[in-house]
Length: 468
Ligand code: CS2
Image 1 (cartoon, rainbow, N blue to C red):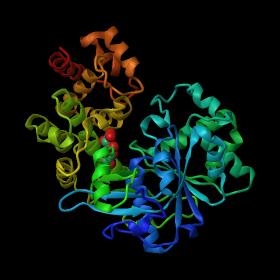
Image 2 (tube, rainbow, N blue to C red):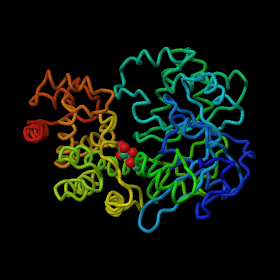
Image 3 (cartoon, rainbow, N blue to C red):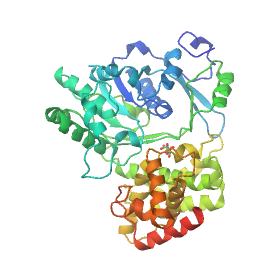
Image 4 (tube, helix red, strand yellow):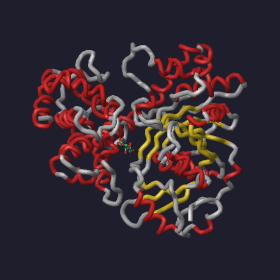
């Protein structure tokens, strides 16, 4: 029997539930890019904030492309469970704060009116790194896709939907919005704001001004490891909770959300659910991107190259585990100024334990996706800062060589928006020229880091072994 409002009475009594009247919610968050991560992270924080305050917020989810998530959730009245797996028995909870899901390409106008709805106070986003269309180059002209999107009846990017929703709000005399990026990008809010204003300035300068005056874009750091759900997870859960949940997510007990205190209007009391609302997110975000995500990407490319499948397996490989520890502790942790009281070695120790979690298999292939969009904030910023401080970064360079080898064009499993360009660069530049073609002057990967001669030599030595 499928989970839904009608079948809830049959749900196993051990499933944790927060009692509240779903229909009582008068304040809305529109979430662009509803996937497993948001269900295990933001939705749980919101559910706990509702429990703590009694103030009911609803999340209206938007799937930017596919109908899969809607097809999983709609037959269940948008109810789903989150199961945490760590030491001890897994714990499952029900989440009820999701009100509906729109599949954007099926009904673009509904997404626009949801953003313009007077009930909406916040738009949150998890659209992955590539969803922001950031080129990394200050001077580059806007991608034509972004120029056309604000006027398109079927927008293809977040910018089109935001532009049209904000225009309606302004025309109706409604207040602005808090637009909160929850993706793993450095300065995510600031960069989203800059790009949105750039798009709007090109098409409707008055709207750009209204947006700058009335909307805020807090930066945030989100953290929870959420592996893609596997079919046998869903089967096992069904036998435990008595109902079938096609939208179930499985995650670790740990969760963290640090949000810059910059809201345009009301928000759920997320701090009552453990979120940290702070003046400056940067030290937390830098630590998370460079240490957790930096280590993750290293595990992915070095691990896959040695035939490992899971994070825990790669971490247990002495060669890889040692390198990853050094990447976090010696290189990433020694590349930036931590906040007062922020203990980066203790943070590294907690990450090592999380990566080793045997109860939560996490596929390296999931992390390896979209490397071209991930490595700038995970590795290249660290390389640049350390280079400026005269410090060598052998662990990151080895991981970087593994990524370069990963995208050389002969691996059918590579999933990256720039896969073809990268494979072509390999063909043209070859093993000895590829690092300069990617990161040198005018290179393919726009970055703060330009390899020094000795760094190029290190990369080239690694590539000799890794890429034949
Ligand atoms: C991972 C992240 O897939 C990836 O690239 O590094 O999704 C990671 O699991 C989360 O950022 C953890 O908070």
